Length: 71
Image 1 (tube, rainbow, N blue to C red):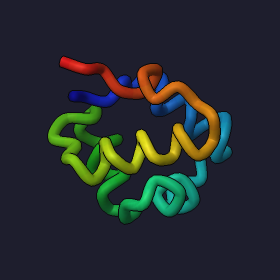
Image 2 (cartoon, helix red, strand yellow):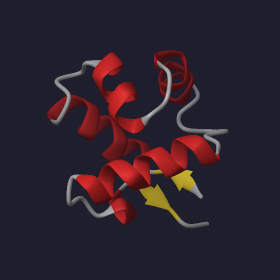
Image 3 (cartoon, helix red, strand yellow):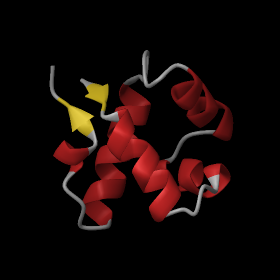
Image 4 (cartoon, rainbow, N blue to C red):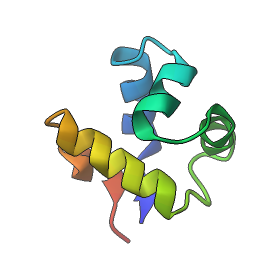
């Protein structure tokens, strides 16, 4: 699985007003982890990150398939 970075960045901009700390808190990861995801274009996002995105999407009635590619 990998992150759809275009949709992920749009979520950061639109839902969180570019507030990385708030997004990281809502996904359940550290701001450092979020920064590494953004810096590395989503590469090496582990289970915790992917799981956090899925949980966030379910809790907020988003389709997690819009944010995660199943590879």
